[in-house]
Image (cartoon, rainbow, N blue to C red; front, side, top):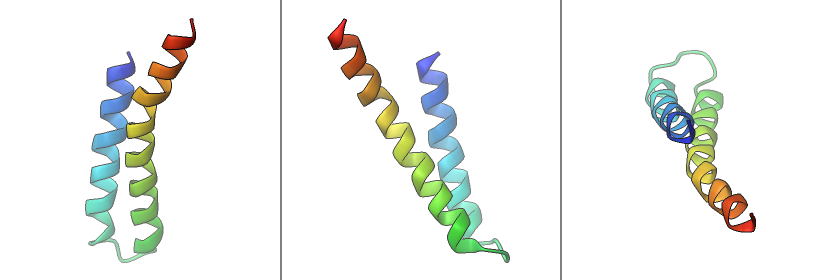
Length: 55
């Protein structure tokens, strides 16, 4: 389940970053949303690992 969330965030973020270059409306906002999504995708396994070690 965690891998699916990671994959959706990562691929979705890459799509958003790519679409930001072709977006005529608020390309900066779309780019920032893509970067934040990629950052969240990287943070998910790290956070899950920390919670797993605490158990």
